[in-house]
Length: 205
Ligand code: GRF
Image 1 (cartoon, rainbow, N blue to C red):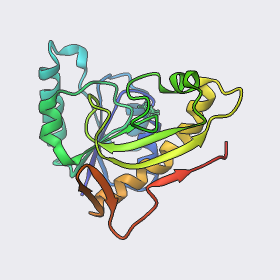
Image 2 (image 1 turned 135 degrees about the vertical axis):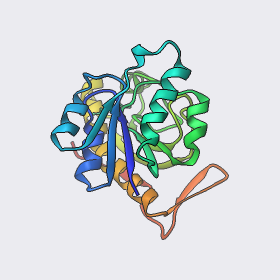
Image 3 (image 1 turned 30 degrees about the horizontal axis):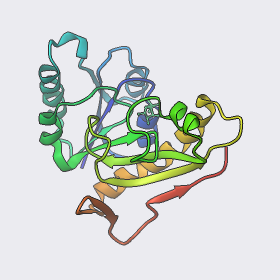
Image 4 (image 1 turned 30 degrees about the vertical axis):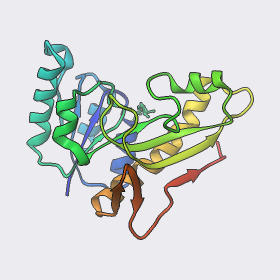
């Protein structure tokens, strides 16, 4: 029933998963200095650092990462601010039990620097997406999205903070649905058995 969470940095989404009481078996980082690893350790979780810089190729790094993950036989692998592109072999290995968070309303703004790009494009609504799949392709089936308004005078940081608050709302929800066996993917479209809100809109700051 457990989840392995992969992080690269501060780990606020990981904390949201923990705070929601989800069964996290381990937190693994690709940098030993990821702040989130220290937070997880303080919460008595199993942590590990598999440092990408110690491996010559992406394939070797991904193999070491998969070996560490598989020690826990997780039902789900949750990428939570994990800033490495994963190889197709890794993504295929976890297939339908790999989820990721992306700070935009996909398919808009795949890739990096989403908040600055959203402001530059002049969009009036922005947000985040939880989806199946690894980091290479930003088009895995979308499980849930949260939308927020873009306000006049927003900076990338202010917009990022507004989106992040909603990331912390929808990521635990998506993981819970998965563990409860409620997600159905048909022709690339995700629905939730028993139906539930796959769209959150929040205009609070
Ligand atoms: C989040 O905004 C996530 O969407 C993006 O990286 C950030 C990670 O934040 N991919 P945190 O480490 O979960 O605090």
